[in-house]
Amino acid sequence: MLSLKIPSRLEYRDPAIRVVASVCKLLPHRGGDFDHAVISAFSEAINNVILHSYGSEDGELEIEIESSADRLTIRVMDYGKQYDPAAVPEPDLDSLPESGLGVFIMRSFMDDVTYQAGAPNILSMTKFSRAEKRMA
Image 1 (tube, rainbow, N blue to C red):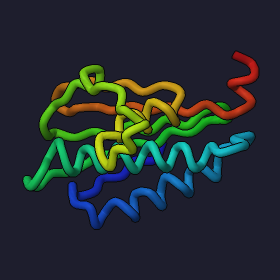
Image 2: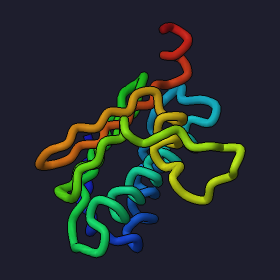
Image 3: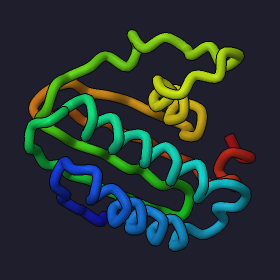
Image 4: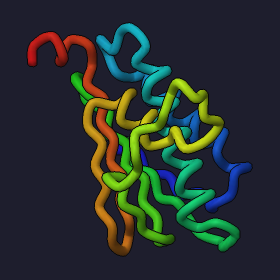
């Protein structure tokens, strides 16, 4: 497992994304758009925490990345405001919204997304390798 702590500021987003991208390359048999899907979902996750959980307050994000032969799991933990992702409505894609797509992107690109409110709030996202999906 790889752990990373970053300040809750947008300028730390790109270095964190680079770490996730590097870990994606370690997973064998990932195939297809695996890396793109994971990086897109992770980007949305940290954007949401930075912009909505902490807002203008200082805070810290803890990121855990766990990889194995068949999956990659990323946990983003924060001590900011809680939210209920189940209460986020599906976006009207026909209207081409410019915002409000973060939870939709996470759910669309990852195989399992869970959120546990608390101290800390924990967003967990798992993407299975292509080989694992065929077996399921």
